[in-house]
Image (cartoon, rainbow, N blue to C red; front, side, top):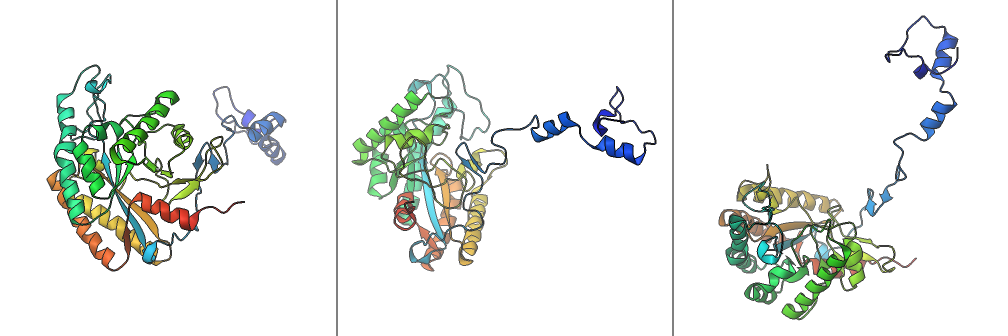
Length: 361
């Protein structure tokens, strides 16, 4: 009897079960040439099968041996607070868009209104720039906590007083793009122009360009355009590690480019997502647990960094700000014993360039 086990089936697909001899069973279990070829090149085969690095992704990273970042004063964690300043740069017909904003507000799950304004959404965003920003500014400056601002260019232009407050506080002001858009399907030409335009806005408002970039909702070409612009020392459009790392993009120059991963986990955006934080106490507990765990890893010889993401219209509400205040008070106790280095992303960049720049091959 010839053929394989898989060919011995009835027309209805059930395996035939006569009392075959041992020789027959062996013959039935041995694939023929066609089946062997199919096994060597299965229908599900893909050119990226088995690769750990492909298409800009890296599933291995530092692996089991991350570098010791050697943070200043032997700190166990580098802690960075990021204040996202987006209000006035979101989708709105008044901004020339074709729909209203739909993301990160008190109205969880609301859809965009096509060709219409959404009065409630506009008002919720306005709270961020009118009230939430100033509450967070008072809180952070009173605690002497440095922070990095991810600032949307269009939003900055609408509030010069807030810009002056950021600058006077000594905060790092990084670029959050020109618009708070989803750039997934935005053309390279438009995105390139937006990146250049927001750099110019920073130069006009603050007297210097941003050194960091976080588009926030990028596409696979965004990093290439950031490198092409030529003046950014880092970008944060990544969530894939607890430490900075170097990368490069083919065709844009051989100079290494630093990635400082951001977070959607230790982030107040969970106040505006299903099953997220319901009150400031939960926010405090989660941040404290995260920081405590990283400190323990640092004491075991593997220091890390931690980012806390903030939004003026979200944690800028008083009940939520109370949870943030509790965390800042806790952080101050850890600063006192040297476990935590509270810093801006620009300070992390300068440290990484000084101590971890790749050696020339």
